Image 1 (tube, rainbow, N blue to C red):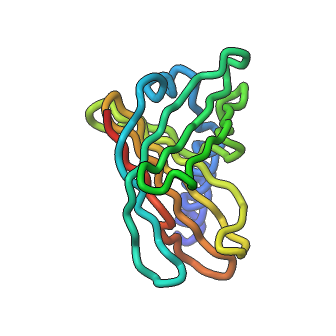
Image 2: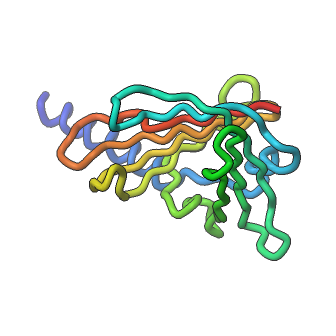
Length: 166
């Protein structure tokens, strides 16, 4: 009985790992992000105070003219313009890597929302960590949640979340 249970667990673990390895997205999936400005907020965990802070945030996503798998994410903070910036993000040819992170989930939610989850090793608060981003992409809503699991810990914490609308 124990061997059958062990075998079932091994098959389940393999299936989960295989699905994570085959998760992918396409340039077409990111098309709804392009165009007009998105407006909303950024809520972030202030490590100094341990409290969450919310500020106004806007984003414009522009598809590259020279590379079909690249976009520019221009972030604007109306009350803190010195923090404005832009990031160039790209999608791998096979769609398994987005913005340098492995795509571990791609699923459709009710209302046509696409949920994309990525992960990578990185640093946050000057510490080694696993970084997980969750993108929710819809026609009228867009969000990016960043979660961090510091080395030596067992749980992810929400570092920040952007919520925008059109």
